[in-house]
Length: 181
Image 1 (cartoon, rainbow, N blue to C red):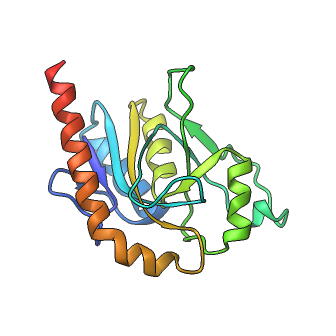
Image 2: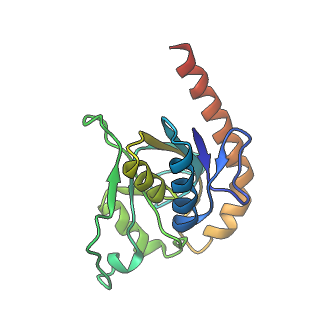
């Protein structure tokens, strides 16, 4: 099953689950309770911490939930804040960080790169956590719309429609490739 966030980020081939960690966790849990999918593929936009360029496509099976306060030693968590459905130990994923907030402090977010975290998307950690709970293989495909800086929102708005087109082309191409195997 292919899922997406919703609101302005919908696709004709994906089921919307909600924006942010909470909405997506609630709605995806409800879906899994009543009609458990065999596989979950999340598609969406993402912000880059600096290594990935606008309109790059990133595929990942690993997510984190690290808030900016952690990076400045102003917060900690007793929770496991990194999750992966990657069973290919030889393949290293780009880690996707999830928060209900969009990062705009470029200097602070560069610290994510030191933790091997490359991009951010609001929903992906919740998707992988629900998938883990229901023992469902899962992954995500993302298109970069912005960098995590003071212009993050404006760049997201400017690049969002093109990113959605690129994502749609990429996902449809990959589905075609997989069905030929």
